[in-house]
Length: 220
Image 1 (tube, rainbow, N blue to C red):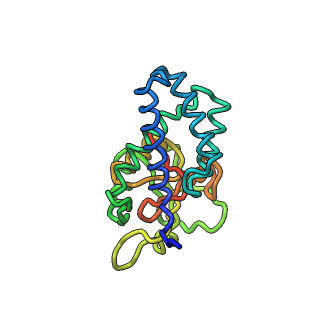
Image 2: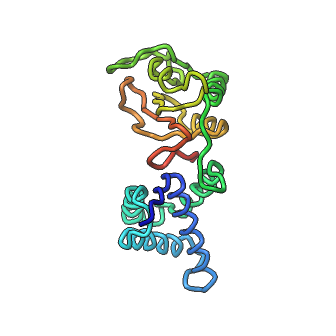
Image 3: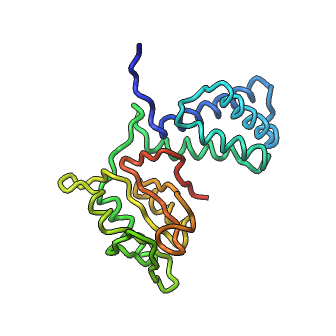
């Protein structure tokens, strides 16, 4: 029996989105689907449902397929599945090697992100110990809070690379944060956009090697 390892979520969702777009394009070429947004949406909504029923893709993407199915049913053409798949191919494609692996994340990338946020006028609170619900005053500024102890445990002491997930508590311009993170080859994964251990802040996670188990946040 084959002992082939399961793909990472990043590789699995990239493959899924690539196949969906390729098969949509083939449907355009053979004349079965026109290039109108309504027909493209109808095709992709049906494609997602069929992928779920046939269990075509790795188990790690099953949950996001169900989310897309629900969006397709409730939002129709506004579900924007084609745009979502294009974003996945573009962004995850820039992180994956030809072999499908992800590069390690280093402390220098995180420090560079913090520097960019500081230059953009964010309040950075990095010296707190967050072991319970707490409030941090940023005087109305966009703010990022991290737990000092968690940060110290998350960074390998010699190699200076991220070895454990790092929570970032965010209040403010999340779109700007996502864009600045991408510029430093970092993906952010949303846990919550409001309620978290830090009052009025959402929680976003940076994973080692950007290997989050669900879909990363993309710029709007």
